[in-house]
Image (tube, rainbow, N blue to C red; front, top):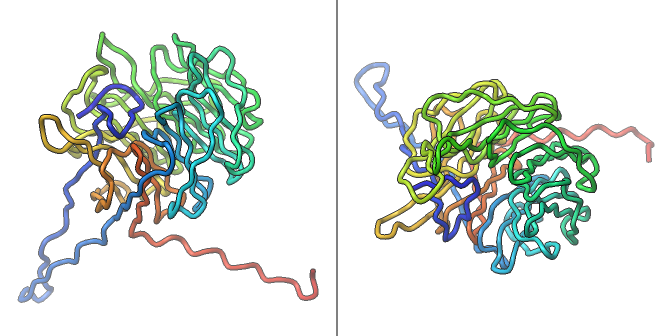
Length: 390
């Protein structure tokens, strides 16, 4: 099932999402002599194991990692917002105290283990939460002037963070070079576009995805591309049939966006999930020709050939029940496989992959560790010391 709103609360929400798939394995291969046949071994599984979130997190909305061990999940709580952190790669999590007054946290980015920014809203004003001590304390940064909300954030470096902000009538990019202490208004997004996600694979190239309203209750998928660090944005033509997009991720020039072919922005509409890919840094896009049972909400690509898509799968009827769905490709999108889920009873809204063989995901009040059967690159050999040096 799908909804047109860009940011789902993934637990008891009406958002559907997800992603299930048909695993295609070559069945039987004839031997060179033609007399004997054998079955290929099935590929090793992708395994996702969830655990209850600590504290008050009830609906995770975003997740980011500074490195393989340090990651933060943000979202909603019964009284406002929540921030959870792990310092051991997802084995355990702890609650952290967000600044008072925040009502929404929609995005988070952590360019270093000591530095994270999270964006959202505080009532009818935009809001930025900042930590420079690894999450021990969080304070309010300066929100972009005139913004009533911020929807997405990408910090490719400590001294460069780009956020998407709105005054209620238009969306624009806001740039901070001092870890959220001040913001400069950059270029406007294409007219009418409502962004849901932002990826900046480099200091100058950024891709925003979301939707553009077409008629009342309807919107078409939208992608905007900046090649000058957010100073200007240009709309990108999408293939026919692309619906509302909710997430984007890039590894070098390879990008993938996730969403639904549905264009409905209100109510619940039965529709499959949808993936579109780009091999040229977001300049052009192709629909992935696969039927995905429900919707997709989050995507991460630690390498150009390895990507993970997360969402919600609706099970049963009257009413359908949301469960988690996680889909992975390990060969650059030629094939996709569903993860084996262990305690992922709710929809999954966000994912981050700090290393190629392990990702962390979040949805509702559940935090998930995903193990991929990929060999990480070897660690660099230690440099030889110089005798007598101290």
